[in-house]
Amino acid sequence: MTTRPRPLVAGNWKMNGLKASLSELSAIRDGVMAGGAGRAQTAICPPATLVMAAADLASGSPLAIGGQDCHANQSGAHTGDVSAQMLKDAGAAYAIVGHSERRTDHQETSAQVKAKAEAAIAAGLTAIVCVGESEAQRRAGETLAVVGKQLEESWPAGAAAATLVIAYEPIWAIGTGLTPTPADVAEVHDFIRGVALRLAGAEGAGIRLLYGGSVKPSNAAELMAVSNVDGALIGGASLKASDFLAIAAVYKG
Image (cartoon, rainbow, N blue to C red; front, side):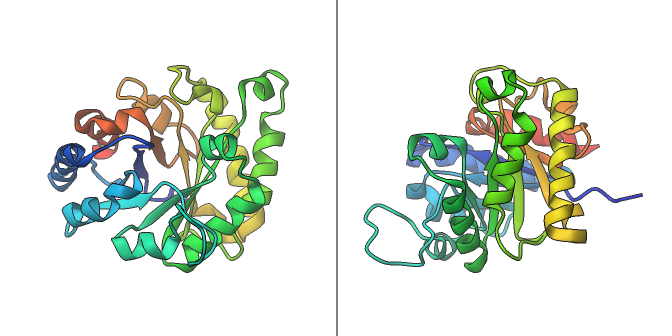
């Protein structure tokens, strides 16, 4: 019997959060330290302006901090960009790359996502690579083909269970309140596990596969129990400590 990887519950604050928001992060930290996340690892990915302050607040606790993106280069003439090394230097442990909002808003290709993931890993971060299909693609029955292609083209060279997390986020479910059925999620996550095993061999069994897309306290237990779901990447619900901790509490049992 294969042992499931240790779950990860990560929050993506997106373009939300000012210094005052650190009170919510402190509450999340305190809840995690009190055992509120059970056996799950936890992380919050605030905007870049708050990464260093957030890392300082979380220092010494089980709560990790991550960035929401990184540049593929270590440094250089890239005005406005943040490198993986900068995130690591600021105290981050994770970097989200390839989120659908960046693939769409910034026309990021999977080749660029792969380069970013490799930069994150080289800097000592764990890369959270996001994949997912649009509503039109799902209606056309293209979900597995789309997700498979994104995985193949975004997969960082030499990825291992300790350095790579995959997050499946159906674009049509992000921030809409719509959620796939557990059977839908299981189909995609089982497929992703198969791809991970093919691309990474035995290491693929330990790579954590997160579900994201309108995860909230009311549906977390059902979604986290699905085959090959090893945690969640949470958007809006991670902005409130009570909601984030309620989702993480699924793993207290």
